[in-house]
Each structure stands twice: as structure tokens, then as C-alpha cells.
Image (cartoon, rainbow over all chains, first blue to last red; front, side, top):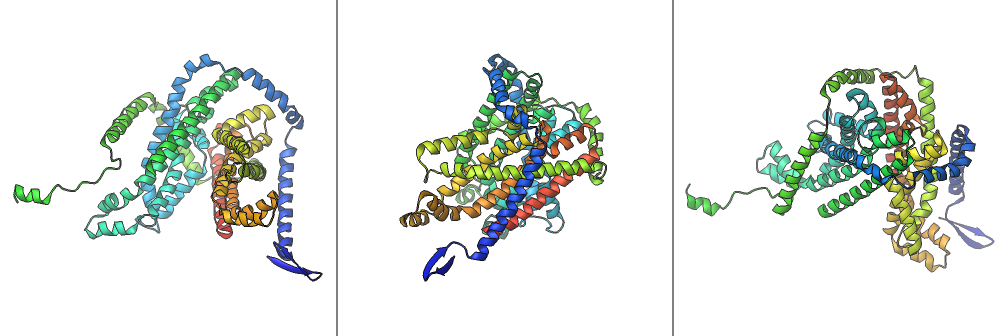
Length: 271
Length: 270
């Protein structure tokens, strides 16, 4: 806030001169960086294709409509696979995430010096790599199919679940833990009666939340050969069967909407 | 110890179950067991293939121990720059488009028709997976980072507008009313009454989204939308696990640095 006197009259301005200049300088630098970046993209873009895009979009749209409804018969099995990848992947991820979370939380870790950094490393490295990249790798290792997708989804989810879970563990009410300890409970009993009941709602919320995300991600895993409905999508795209593509996209959209609805309902019931 | 004493002591304490209604509890339990059995049976695992693959998996673990940054250094560098460029431009453009849509999607400051239109834009953008959008945009605009840039901008709109709208809906009305009472126009009301309240959160969310966009830009290349993903895909296809490990390590490092920076910046603005 700066008030200057011009011709004996007080004038209010939001920033004083130096702050204003600094903010303009920052804007200038930011704009320059943005323009440079844009130049990079522009240099490798074939602009005639860009100007042609509305026609192409209309063309593809015309070919894709109406969706080939009869193809639905072949989609039930991949859809079931997709659901399994998401659900079993979440279950497996949670089984691995729980010990990691307990090792990462400051108040439950066996050793803050040695175990905690390892747990945090697991969390960061699994979280920063997208499930599609995990799938790409696992298809090479385990062979194409649902199993690779399942493992990819579960590895990707460990970091996410463990991070949210260990934050929940760190936020628990310590007095309950103390009360259980005071009865002479062992370490495991303290965990089962003092900590677990407190984080149960958070755990259920995280599980459903991640399941919702996993269902979205498992719909595209097939693009790299890891099973599910993405496999059909890839096949249809490669054969330029646009009516099938539009049907598959509709099915995926519907699945996502349903999963979001389910997850919102369940979380609403828990909280 | 007699039966009388037992009775006086009452029943032994049992841990209360997480789901209190027994009907719902048992339905859920039995339902999930049946589902698990069905699901497990429908998944075919070719164990001999998995066994043969373990060797390759081990090669990958070894490759992680000594990643090869040098032999494909030029490709990695170009890919990373392209990913960073895509992430940055799409975040900037995404924010620029999200602010008006976010304002429109906040129930307390917009009129009903605008609110419905903005909310449906947000819903569409959030429901479509980035990869699916990228496939369509690659088909329309051709291969290259432009398709990736458009995809990420589109995804950013849904994310930022929704959270911005929620932030505006939660804001303190008094300040906006005070500015309004001075006779401010609609734009002045926004700039002086609403914007200062939401800007710390907006900055935090933007940096978080930059982080997400960078991560996503690493996979868009798999479907031909530019960025490091194309290089990674090629490395995997050629079974050059040491190069792939190098790329993954670079991605992890950048993501960690971004996360650290965003922590600092968010702590400063809030």
C-alpha cells in the first residue's frame, strides 16, 4: 500500500514504485520465457496441418458417427478385465502401502534414520512415474496381458496411498495411543487398538479415491499392451475403425462417470 | 472363579466393528469374497512367460544401478526440453483460460446460465483421460508437441477451474462487499475484492499443476504427442534398459526438484 502526494492531493496505489517495477520486471521475464517456449513448439509444428484441423476433425467426426453398437458384444470381456485391473490393483497396492506408510510416519517408524528414508524413497519413486510407463516396462518383463496392467497399477498406487496414509497416521490423537500403552499393551496391540481405529476412515477414503483414479488409468493401459479396454481402442485406432473408437470412448466415459459416482457415494457415507 | 463371578464381570470387551450394521457388513464381506474369486479366476497369468521375463526384469534393475546417460544424451536432452516446454506453456495457457471459467463456475458470483456452462466445461475436461484426448488431438493436429500442449491445456482447465471455483465459493464475502460499497465496477470488484483472497491458493495450485503437467508430458509421447515419452518408448522397444533407466531417473529427479520448489513457494505465498 502506497500513498503518494501529487499536487497536494493524496493518491492511493496498491503497490509502491519499487514493488510495482519489480512485478513488471517479473512479468517481462515470464512472458519472454513463455514466448521462447512457444517458439520451440511452433518450430516443430507443421502449421498447414493445424489450419487443416477443423476439416479433419469434421471428417473424423463424420466417420465416427454413429457408433457401431453391435461391437458392444466384444467389449464386455475387456471391460470386466479393466474393472479387475483397477480393483485388484488397488487391493494389492493397499497391501503394500500399509507397511510402507507405517514405516514412513514419524510417530510409528521403527527407525527415523534408516527405515524412514527408504520408505520415503519408495513413495517418491513409485509416485513420480506414470502407470503407463510402468505398464510399458512390465509388458516387456511379464509379457503382454492383464497381469502386467495389474502390477503396473498396483506399483503406481503404492506411493499415492502410502503418502496419504502416513499423513493420516502422523495426524492421529496421541492420547489414545498413550492410553493403550498405559494398559501394558505390546507394540502390535498398540497399533491394532490405538492407531488402526483412528486411521480406518482415512484408509477407506483413500482406497475408494485411488480405485476411482485407477479405473480411469486402466482404461488406457491397453495402448501399450497391458490388457483391458485400451487394447480394443488401440486395435480400432490402428484399423481406422472410427465407429468402434467412438463406441469405446463412450463406454470409457460412462465407466469413469459411474466410478466417480460410486466413489463420491462411498466417501460421503464414510465421512 | 464361579459362574456368578463371571456374570458379575459381564461380557468380555470386544472391539467394535468398523461398519456397525451387521447386515451391510456381511453383505459387503461375502460380496467382496465372491468378486475376488471371480476376478482372480478370470486373470490368466502365463507363469512360464513371467519366469522367462524375470531375467529381463533383473537386467532392468541392474540398468538402474548403472544408467546410461551418454549414448543417447542428445535425444534425452531434446526430449526433456520438449517436455518442459509443453508443461510450461500448457500450464500458462491453462491458467489463463481457467480463471474466467473458474469465476463463472463459482456459484456465489456468477449467474445461473454461465454457471451451468462453466461447470459442464469442467466436467467434460475432468472426465476425459489425458491419453484419450491426446490420441484424438494427434489424429486431428498431427504428431508433435502441439497436440501434447493442447491436451495438457485442456486437462489443466478442468483441474484449476474446479479448485479455483471452490476457493471463490469459500471466500470471505465481507471484503468483496466492502469493495462493492465503494461503487466499484465488476472488474474492480474482482481485482480488489476477490482476487487478493484467492491468489495464494491459485499460485500454489498452478505450481502443483505444473508438476502434474510435466509428469503427464512424459507419457504423452507414447501416443505421439511429443516430449520425453517418445524417447522412452523407443528405448523400451529396443530393450535399451540402461537408457530407459537414465530417462526415468531424470524424470524422477525433475519431479522431486519441482515438488521441493513448490513446497518452498507455497510456504512463502501462504
